[in-house]
Amino acid sequence: MKEINLKSGDVLIIRKALPEDATEILQYAEQVSGESDNISYGPGEFGMTVEREQKFLQSLQGSKSCILILGLLKKKIVSIASMSGGKRKRIEHLTGLGITVRKTFWRQGIGSEMMQFLIDWAQQSKIIRKINLTVRTDNIGAIKLYEQLGFLEEGLNSRTLQINGKFYDAKMMGLEID
Ligand SMILES: CC(C)(COP(=O)(O)OP(=O)(O)OC[C@H]1O[C@@H](n2cnc3c(N)ncnc32)[C@H](O)[C@@H]1OP(=O)(O)O)[C@@H](O)C(=O)NCCC(=O)NCCS
Image 1 (cartoon, rainbow, N blue to C red):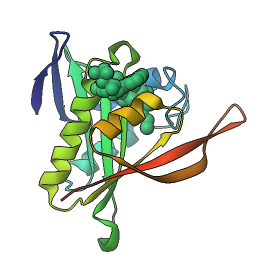
Image 2: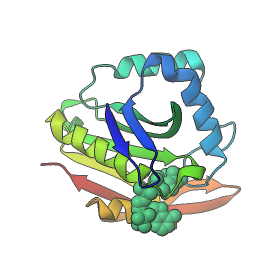
Image 3: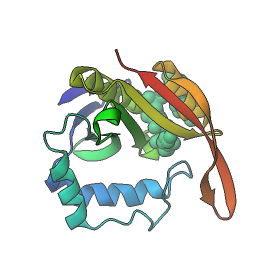
């Protein structure tokens, strides 16, 4: 767990998600699904039941290569970020990263703090040696955030998202962990 004083004066708590957070996590997912077209699901498309989410969160407890963290302001979830590592030996050093912040709280430093928490966790894991992510090429804010943390552009994936019949390309970005 980590407590951070934000520029706004609010205190952000970052902690690992627990099975009992499942219901609020699904409510959060539904809220952020309608706040941008930069993630892989829209309203009503998250497709997870509370029971499955609880099992998933249970499966993460004690994991050294997969983690889901919550950013909380006044006990309400305002951000979720996760990393999911490879299951087989040859790819267990690789992890994919995803992050969202509730729109009302953008530009307060929450995304940066959540990312730094995951990077620190990856460094301490001794297993993760590379963090990969993909980001829509027109998601300028997120790209800037990742670059500020040392992520480098590694290439381009075409047609990564299809929204209302339109395709969107994504940059592949990565951070080596040593
Ligand atoms: C991308 C996202 C996680 C950033 O979260 P955040 O809490 O707003 O990020 P921060 O406040 O820590 O921003 C850190 C820096 O990133 C850059 N940045 C972030 N959002 C930006 C924006 N919309 N425009 C320009 N720069 C931006 C800025 O340099 C910012 O520093 P500054 O505010 O001091 O100028 C958030 O906008 C979000 O959840 N977006 C929707 C989902 C999404 O795009 N997820 C990533 C998918 S790959």
